[in-house]
Length: 414
Image (tube, rainbow, N blue to C red):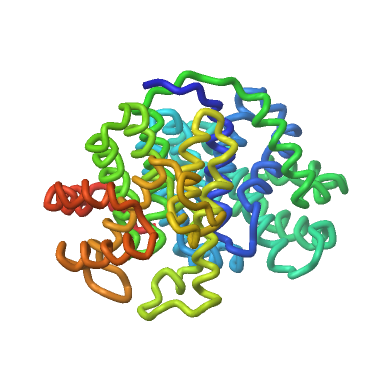
């Protein structure tokens, strides 16, 4: 199975997912990409170098899943624990062949220049990683001023960055920033609409490539590992749902293409949970009405992240429908009956079964008898597809094993 994909669309979508971690502070990765690119114009970097820089900038925080970590990175100019997310991000990108070349830049994007300059690292990696560090800190400094418009912080931020020339940041890169940021347009573009216009054009200029299922799977694994690392109670959830959804599709005699795409959907279905604050995901009690409303937004957010990746439109649709119910009482669109596709119903059943079999903050894992009792109630109330639950019953022990198999080497605590 091969699919025609524009990898820039994938990077853009990954960036949207990462930006959700900020909850109320959106577009951080995109602002960093724009500012890095603006500085690159004053460094006479060529088109290929700029493209690499933009991709690295948009993905620089792929090692951040928790709102706590994001807040530390935004509220403090330099944080002693910042290197951890750089190392995790490096390992994530190394696991994906099409993005592995970005890993060294991510690894050093919080390393101080006075240390980085003497390391045995390619010059281009030093330049890109330190430039991303510089503009990343520019964005943090803007946020710390607590003002309505970025342009109002220009003088304070420029002076602060200049004061770290030669220590945190390369003098040459500081000079490029001071040149780029001397224009009012630099600061005005940081507002969401012009920022999106610039990056949409960058995406549109990308070339489609034929991507194998194995490559798509490695990309989806990056997304899954980021969201599963959000909480100890989500670790392995996406992996288990992906395995089970694919196997259910096979038992349901779906095509190989649908089975493979359902595996991708399983890995990607909970991306929207990156916008759910840590304390809600890890709450040991029942969620209140407001908290549940926040949680309900995650399938919609998953769809928003994925919908613009041409070639994966059906995967995006299934992810958006995995909390819809046969009786029309689900979310976010309240689809019902035949409006909910068969693959989306498979994904929903796999999601329910895996969640019930897994430890959660408010309960331990359930045994098969308890799981099927709950799923029977869900059938009676019109929540899930009875025919698919019957398939799970026929292969109960196998489903339980598939849903809970642990791959210790894949567990990342981001």
